[in-house]
Length: 180
Length: 200
Image 1 (tube, each protein chain N blue to C red):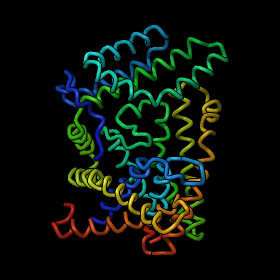
Image 2 (cartoon, rainbow over the protein chains, first blue to last red):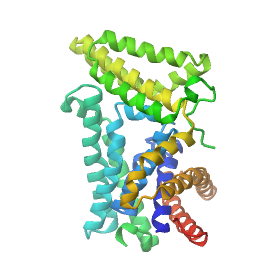
Image 3 (cartoon, chains in turn red, orange):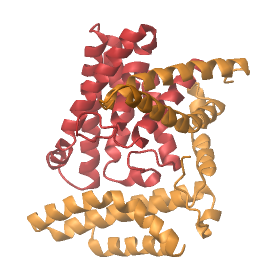
Image 4 (cartoon, each protein chain N blue to C red):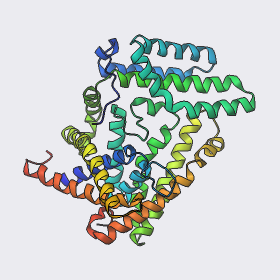
């Protein structure tokens, strides 16, 4: 039990740290924040249930008033902003990414990339687009144009999530709780 | 090392119970979505700004800083409605967005982290049915807050160690050892908890 709790807590902290560390220059010359990469990793490494709970815990602390979202944002205000859909979609994204990881027999790297694309982009964007559509009073089509701006960065992050998960699987297979 | 978003400037709203502020905020947000014309929404925004201004210049400046992330959305909505010519609808969206976010920020700025966490624990109490005991939630929250600065430091150390060995920037590669370190920390913290009587 304790192990579940500490893994959830530590990965919630990891998402926060990935948002605090300003632009680790994930790929050459593209300063993208790693926060949503952290969400993807929660799913691909911890698995569906623990991964989603880690993201929920992270969001609870953001709502409580810690400036843990990239750019130092936080508090209740972010849940009233147009990006609320993405925030609410984060736990579901981790859940789906973890689920893909657990339910497929692909190699860890491939499964993680697929999970990150399906969960961290596909599912997350559905939530994000609905959120922007409601908050900005635009049609779903119009809102999805706005989301396209984030697509290149998130595609890079999905590939990175796959590479990191693959590295972990190679260095220490037991560390992938999603495949335990 | 992490600062909270609570304002160091104490105003009247700091003395209100957190639960009441959250209830008022929920009602206020619903009310904003019920309003559908620019004038009442403009007045609503003016009311929120007035409330923030009662805290003085420093408090108001903090409040303004906290709505700054909305600027890109304001620009996009402005351009969009400038192009379609439907100015009233654009004003409705922008005014409602700022009034809702600013009101929520006001609650965050005037509520201590510990009070907010207390409310969250109260709200989460029914979840005990599913095995989420309040004590466990409190422990998890404390662990996250404790480990964020530790992990941030270590991420820096890993990047420094890389820089000492290589002229190539580490980029995403720091994330592999950082993630492994997080997994190790989780195992050690679990052992430490077990040794001290478990997570109850």
